[in-house]
Amino acid sequence: MKPFVIKNKFTPRGKICLAGDKSIAHRALIISVLSRGKTIIKNFPLHDDSLATLGALTVLGAKISRVNHQVSVWGVKGLSKPRKPIFVNNSGTTLRLILGVLAGLDFETKIIAAKYLAVRPMSRVNKPLRLMGAKITAKNSGAEEYPPLVISGGNLKGITYHMPVASAQVKSAILLAGLSALGKTRVIERVGTRDHTERMLKAFGANITVNKNCVTLNPVRCLISPGRIYIPGDISSAAFLTVLAVIIPGAKVVIERVSINPSRCGIINVLKRMGAKIKVMPLKNKLQSFEPMANLTVSSGKLKPALVNSSEIPSLIDELPVLMVAACFAEGRTIIKGAGELRFKETDRINSMLINLRSMGADIRLIKSGSSENIVINGKGALNGAKLKSFGDHRTAMSVVIAALGAKGSSRLDDISCISKSFPGFLTTLKSLLR
Image (tube, rainbow, N blue to C red):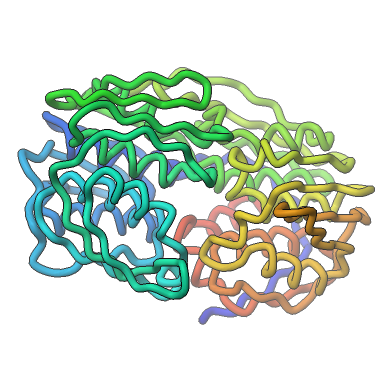
């Protein structure tokens, strides 16, 4: 564990360019491996999660090389039965997407996870893959299933699946399995989730259509690599720096070449409603056109409260912890509806953020309304330094660092090491901006 002391003595200013979006990186690797031809992936992020996917594919026989932030993938003629279990660390995206790939392969594979992922629910992805024909065994606890998992795939059939829970990971696993299935695969969502998989499959030549919240995939003989891909900067990483610039007087930060995928921009939309000064300048991506990106210019300003509806949650689920921080620095009551899915991340993020923000003097409550969990924050425009806990969760840790940088007095975070899961350069980036 690496404790960290945070003091509010700096004003963030400057320009930064972030490593590639984590969600896009997973999909770029997997779909490149499943395609014909060589794919060069630029601005590949070097955090624990993306490297877990790279490692899992390598164990399965994929030919991949990496030099710094550039990855070369030679489309595989056929993935092979691994000689050892696949270790996916704490990456839920790696586990669920790899399950979709393995569902179409006619051999048995065991997947093991690190301690935080080992307690995350897997029934939501196991159920539709079983309906398609995959055989999956898992650790059981009551009605729920958890890693480790053993999957035997092959001989899949397409299905129409109505998603009971909004999850881009589950949707993506079904679509990846659908590439090997007999007949069309259709996924119907109640609320649209991030669409990186659909965009990338289309770029690689998949026969895929999207009609509102219904995605239909017809199998094709072979996906074809577009050759080169540039991964825009991670909007989830940018969210921490955006909130930092908004809450500290005199701040001005430019975040260059960041993803502005419409299914991921909820944090930008909500912050703008709260009065944040964020200028979005769209850019043309020369290496690919399926993921939009932009430069963001963020300046400090007075925040007002906002109502966040449950329909917006899928577009900002990973950014909710730092949005809660922003709400504490606003003046008035912010309500975040339907936030219950935060309980099923690396830790229970509702619990971790309530504990930390209350210790900093926040007036924050959880109100249950039927099956919905709503977070109510009576913003006071300020927080106070405190002893903080990461709970082993990267987004909790980064969110409370941002809160502490905007708070009065100093704070101490018990562990900073978990941040390497998604943003290993977080502290270095902060130091480059804090002057």
